[in-house]
Length: 444
Ligand code: C2E
Ligand code: MG
Ligand code: MG
Image (cartoon, rainbow, N blue to C red; front, side, top):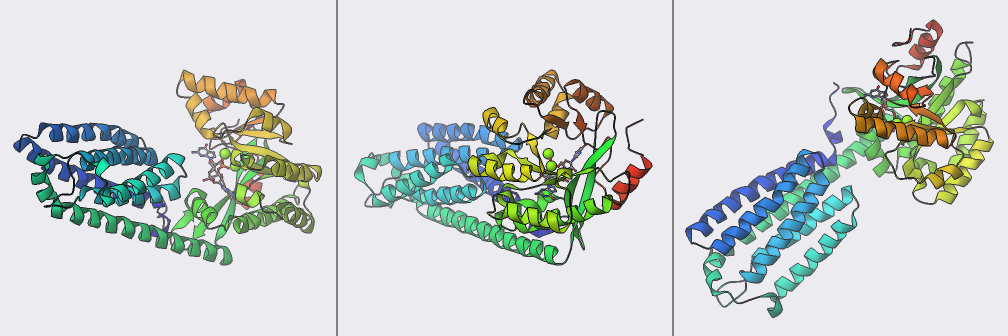
């Protein structure tokens, strides 16, 4: 496994680390408080802490399943409710002590802000706004947000120093983590730009085969050939490149390299008629001059457009479908073909798909894998394939790893296949050699 440069550790890894520390600290502090409440026979307070602990259990389960942001959302709601309850019922400013529990509220809002940067969610906006509002209200010491509870004084004495100290520490911790993520991202974006200008990207090709296992084309897949880390997967750097807005530049490089390789394939009879599939990100496709530049590049490289298939994902149809359709129509008229990549993972409606000049849908690898695990997976994969064939489209099964998966996806109506069973992504030279020698894996 190549070592991923530290600048490319996803932001969520830092956030997860920070939240883990915060969670352990919160558990330790809660245990101290719980002991204290039980010792002073404050059953209501002890019970409320236990309820909080129980409500955070689903957070752990969600986090363990990798649903980090959902887990965070739930934890924020639970903590906000608890802080509200505590401020309202116990922590009330009086002639002896100022209220201090509300100092945790800005931390909840700040965590919400960081989370929102990663996944845009309306619930998160609601939490941030509610937190800010509650912070203002509790800071103003509004009378309607209090009930007079004399027994609370002893806890206020304990919290008078502890809460400001802990809330400030958490606040600073979150700011530092935010800054670290920000500077890491800046470094990673610079490194990606350097990679582009220093020719560190390469294109590999994964063969695409028909029902008989004969190669009909290949999908171009980018890799970053990092000088010290080796080949880096696109899943590592594409999200940062997209966020920094440099994906269109990388996409242009991919197109021009794929066109050059396609031209090279024209030199031999075995590879002359093969197609090349090129992945296009939504931000690249939506560039106002995408169509003009692509047609220009095709002309300059003397490429026959009908041998080029552009792979779009469902995200492209979400906003401005009319513009997308117009662009697709113009390119289809020039001969380009279109595939809908990772089909089944998005939410595009069938009526939208019917109106677009699509030729192919590619069933996501997760469905192919799922179909070989259980019956539910079989039903899902079969229905997705059926949907494609009923729309009159060629259906591609991605991620075929075993002969069993190949046979099954054939039965479901797929006619084009791609996967490690046939070949992993390889260089253009290895690809042309493989086609010339007709030595595909997994095919007799
Ligand atoms: P994708 O377009 O769906 O490409 C298929 C991915 O599945 C590739 O991963 C391929 O190596 C992998 N794959 C194919 N067969 C198998 C299999 O049998 N088993 C397993 N485990 N994996 C298989 P890769 O190359 O890491 O690319 C990941 C994604 O990154 C691509 O998904 C595509 O969305 C994006 N990508 C790759 N190259 C480019 C590019 O040049 N431009 C753009 N815009 N996106 C790219
Ligand atoms: Mg693809
Ligand atoms: Mg795919």
